[in-house]
Length: 158
Image 1 (tube, rainbow, N blue to C red):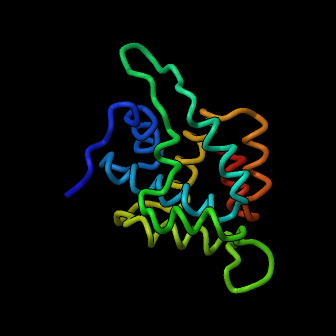
Image 2 (cartoon, rainbow, N blue to C red):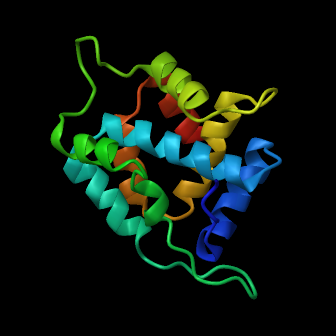
């Protein structure tokens, strides 16, 4: 059973859905959560909290649409994964857990139930673009500093 999409998340997820070439808003939600999970895995808890704080602010959107709060998508829906991401160090530097661009894109494609014929880089870029619309220049730059080479390029292009 799929959890209903909250009205306040719709404008953000519709933006992701259109830019990623997805046909289902539930796919947009699931893939957004995975992109956010991998992003958080790259960051310190403090950096991820600063992003969450900015995403927590309600943002006015066009016409009749309600206020949206993207912070709920930034939090992990899996309580165990959410807890672990708060207590472990960032997955950067040497070692088997390092997340490089290939691993980042691999995780998005495989953890998110990516539909066939959807380009994983296009999905990542769509989530990045919608997210950047919600953040201050300082947060945008901070996130960029955590991303590996090719993924950082997608962030910059989004």
